[in-house]
Each structure stands twice: as C-alpha cells, then as structure tokens.
Length: 267
Image (cartoon, rainbow, N blue to C red; front, side, top):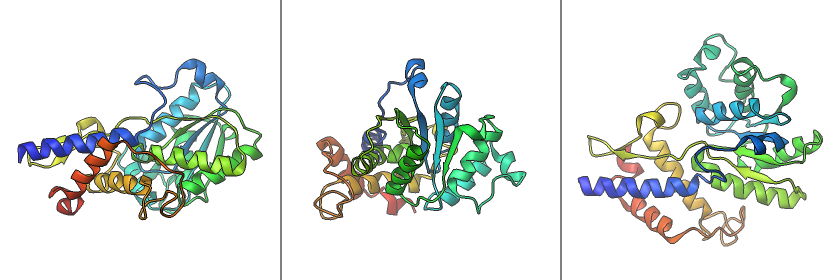
C-alpha cells in the first residue's frame, strides 16, 4: 500500500501541475507587468486563495480594473461555504455575503470591504454559468469599458489551463486581440496520509476542495481536454481546439482513473 499511495500522489501531482498553467515563476507577476495591465480577471471558482490574490494584485496595479466573473454554477454553494469558513467569514455573518448572490457579487463584497478597492475599479459579470461564458461575457464587458490592453487571468488552478484555452478560443471568435496571461496562484499537491489515502499539505487544506472533489476535478479536466469522442476537442464536442496533452500526463491520468484509490473509493 505505501508504494501504491506514493505512486498515486506522484500521478495526481503531475496532473495538477499540468493543469495549473502559469506564465510566471514562483514570484508571480512583477511590478513592470502589473503597471502595464489593463485588467485582472477572476473567473468564478471556489478557491479562496484566487480571490485574495486577485485583489492583492489589483492593489499593486496602477491602472488595471478588476473583472469579477461568475453567475450561479456548480461552484457557487462551495464558494459560499468556503467564504463562510475563511478569514472573510465576518462578511457572511454580517449578511453582506449571502447564498443567493452570484459568485461575482460575493467576490465584489470582499474586494470592496476587505481590500478597499473602489467600485469604479471593479467590473462585475454575474451571468456566466461555465468557462465559455466567463470568457465571452468578460471580454464583452472589457470592450464596453474600452479596456483592450493586457489582461491577467486567475482561476481555480485545476481549471486554469482549460480556462485559458477557452479564453483564447472565444477571443478568436470575437476578434479580441488583447494579450491574455495566465496566473495559477498555486500548484495543488497531495501527499500520502497516515491512513493510506492522499491528503493536502496544511497550507492547501483550507478554502480549497475536499479530496473527493479535487480528484473529480483533475480527472474531469483531462477528460475534457483530451481530443477524443468524449472530450471537448474537434473529435468530440467541439468546444475547444485540439490540445496536445503530454504523454506522461496521460499515463498518470490512466493510472489514477484505474486506481483502487480513485474518486469512487474515496466516497
């Protein structure tokens, strides 16, 4: 069992590192880039660290606006639950953040209240229900605001790569030429637990996912990115262009999918 769980963790970590597409090193965007940005976009997800990072980066940028994208979707309740248990929980207890709000509206409360970001620097897109709508509606809002310069995009690290592929596709359809940069706030990792199952390191355990959801997310992302009859590429549902997934990532995906310690076993 120890060897099996160690191999599973290595495979999970390889998949997660591939999905957490990042255009920067561990230090993230530097001052020169931040000063040149026209916008920082946070796409709807449940991971609290992405919200904190987006707001902190906006504070360091002279001219950028903060685009908050997300209506009601699969992550909305999970976002609310994570916010309730986070350092922003007082905003929930005060009734400023409510379950009925869209994801972007929850984000905006934190941005304005906890980070004192003026409303004039926030653009809210609260209709989107999926990645394609995140991109399409956010791009339209930016066009309407005459913001067509470089944009930094933050998303749940497990969805960062697909979100960027989707953003690029939607931009090509719309004739949107602004440069888009990808910033994964962290790379998810797991380690063997004393119970023989994977666990998150302490600094990734709060405000993120349950292990069941995390494994379901990373396996689901590879399934969507694969260009076959079940994927989102040209050979499948045609939502995405062809994505060439490295063979080691595919091998890890196959092993995790077939493992006795896969999502089903963790439920």
